[in-house]
Length: 195
Ligand code: GAR
Image 1 (cartoon, rainbow, N blue to C red):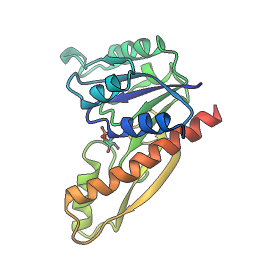
Image 2 (cartoon, rainbow, N blue to C red):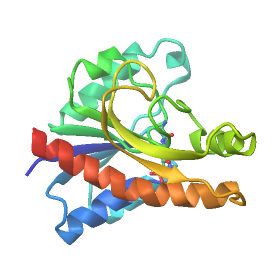
Image 3 (tube, rainbow, N blue to C red):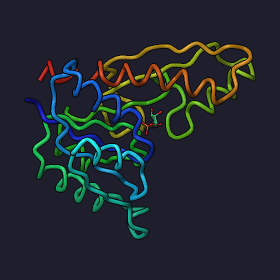
């Protein structure tokens, strides 16, 4: 059974999609650990409920500018669980070379936008605002291999998400999240099969 480490920072609805699909037998994998960058992330409750080991590793104030020590600490913490794949599912910290070099081609990230569009935080809100200004007609979701550049790197899979003229931000968020929950499962399945 391939071992997956899931990194979260908040709600963990994508983690839940992975937990549920594994439980239903439709995804052959084991979540070896869930790591959160925040102690109050609801995803930690989801993991504990599913009996998955959890770790919390917040970024210290003195690590804000130089992330290298954090990257090494995170990689060391994860290596103890021998993951075959590291999945960033709502992980809101940038991971640098000190981390990526320890898991070459083994880190994927879920991002709520199409490749090249809206990297960073609040991507759905920025897509919603861009639609209002007539700059885009649709948005999307992608899962990609993680490289040093934020929310960039070879795409594993992606799916466009339509925006309706009268969409509120929360309606668009809900539509994006529904797509994400399928896409993250498909991407993990695809990548694990390729290992
Ligand atoms: C998801 O929309 C994910 O794509 C996004 O955070 C949300 C986490 O939701 N990630 C990023 O924006 C990364 N740049 P969840 O905690 O309910 O899975």
